[in-house]
Length: 198
Image (cartoon, rainbow, N blue to C red):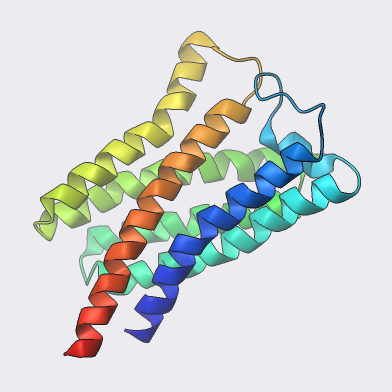
């Protein structure tokens, strides 16, 4: 229960830390365009911009990894839940790797970026099955909706190319995953508190 509490706190803090440093990086680089750039472009801007962006992703990725490991206890022994958490762990490691290997690393950066934005919605879709088996229908529906919200910007980009850059789908997808993580972290913290009182 202690680890469940720690992982829940990390799940709440990770998105706020990530977005705070991303927006600080954006603010430090006036040339950045939400319509024409990728967020990762911030990771190769000299001086404070790159430091803010890359450190933000690395630290939030570690926090997200801690959150993911706590889900093993929260989702019980269901195999489908463990598979979903496995993909979430991979997503968190990919998030760390985006900060460690910025755009200057070429194809390595591309692969870890794609891995994060693929593994995140995939993990959520698999976890839908875990919540369904646990008869937590509301959480199953909520997780499904946020998974769709995380994947939709990329599907629409392929179909219509509504922006020339990828910063918008990156931000929308990450925000959807963040909302899900915060809500789920709240559930984990409540369960930890109930178990402590018992």
